[in-house]
Length: 84
Image 1 (cartoon, helix red, strand yellow):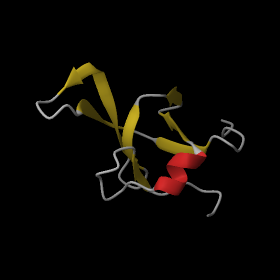
Image 2: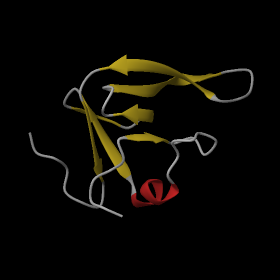
Image 3: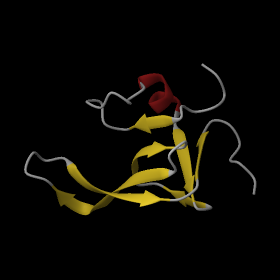
Image 4: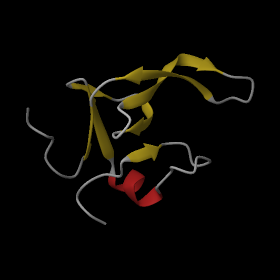
């Protein structure tokens, strides 16, 4: 595995963008220059993140998410955080 996180990654194991090796290693996300801990999915090339909306769940028990547009910078937590 390389030292750059995937372009698109999801924390949901049912998603086609779930990558277990990256999730085990730990991926951090900076969105618009701010560290986000509640990111459910992100896409660097399209410039968006999906963050959980509090404790709200849908009828299937999945967390409700909100899609936000902006600059996304993912990094592996076992390496240094990117400096700005």
